[in-house]
Image 1 (cartoon, rainbow, N blue to C red):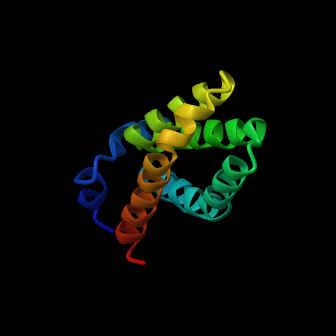
Image 2: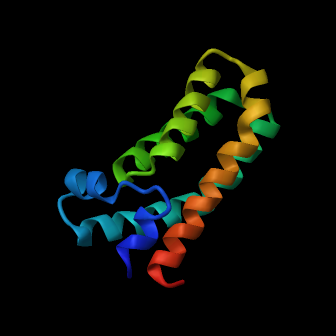
Length: 118
């Protein structure tokens, strides 16, 4: 596993290691993130399509927190923006920006998989 795969893709690994203690814990948390995203991404899309803004907000909030811990700064920022939009019931913002959120989430998932050699 080459840390450069992460750092070259905008991941602040040092921030993640600082928060989580060491590289082993960081790698375990990456595994947890991948597992969580298997259901989180489809549910974010589902809640968006169903106009279930409360559950949408809960999921993007969780994604923001996980992303912050792992040093996914761009994903954390996008998730935060969606969380705030959901709080304000700003459906227009969510509609106009959900593709960017999902694309960045999928990009990070692929970067982690490449890092882990999957």
